[in-house]
Length: 112
Length: 114
Image 1 (cartoon, rainbow over the protein chains, first blue to last red):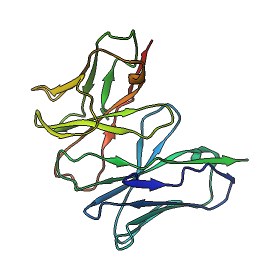
Image 2 (image 1 turned 90 degrees about the vertical axis):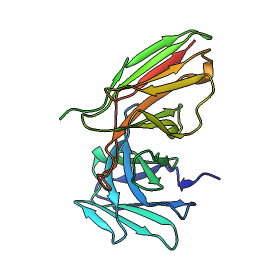
Image 3 (image 1 turned 180 degrees about the vertical axis):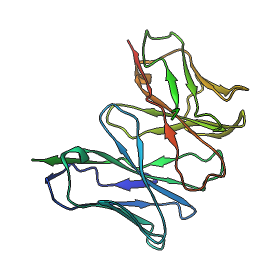
């Protein structure tokens, strides 16, 4: 079983739709949580960090439930340019030397 | 702003050859991480360095070695290459104590072993 699990998708949605991705992690000692976006054959890029209180950045909202070890990402008003793979990422803590553990990614395809 | 620089961008090697991948972190970043991403896979952690010392080790084969130099750049040395080593190799860097700012990845080196 992977340490970070995601529904691989693909999620096929029309432009303007709202889509939600979920992620669960197994290590209760995980401290830092992120959503990364990866376009085909490109490097992962940080989309947003995820805080315990939940946080929003424009059309993107991230939630963290430590008790359930569950992270979510909500994308509102989907754009064609949102098409990518979204990677849920956790780390044990944010001190130097701790690696990122990736989920398998969820592929999103936004169609006209 | 300066990003994480990786070289080469593409590399083609034959089986049993050796390869060296280089990574130049963002200035003032003291930690470097190496990841391997096979086709259709998520990135898998290989190894990391903090202040020129190895700090974490993941699924790095014994045929691979890495180090971080005094200028903080890092090199991943791969020997006795196998077909299964064909992948995208990403380097990421971070600075300790910066809080939940995440990490920055380089554009990767695409290694093809034939």
